[in-house]
Length: 124
Image (tube, rainbow, N blue to C red; front, side, top):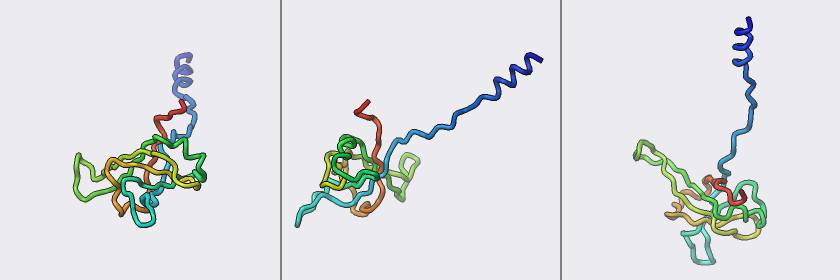
């Protein structure tokens, strides 16, 4: 009986239910940096979810941004492609940021959701 009791106690492990680690936050591509009559396509303006003022944007400087989109043709067994960028600086006082991408974002991406990666973190 002692062996059976040991087997039962070993098999009934209690697992704590933890929240999964959040690896990215969402942002909306609102448009390109622009002046009155010129548009600078190399800089994209992003509105990060939960960031509402300029001082909160500093923790996102240097973070990587991914625009994931679907295409018709498969490449490397996937129909998804990614354009990577990086948050460069803040834009205005309402919590928008400027991001520079490896390839300029296409205009059809305006209003779409991007991922801002939270790791690696500078604060650690």
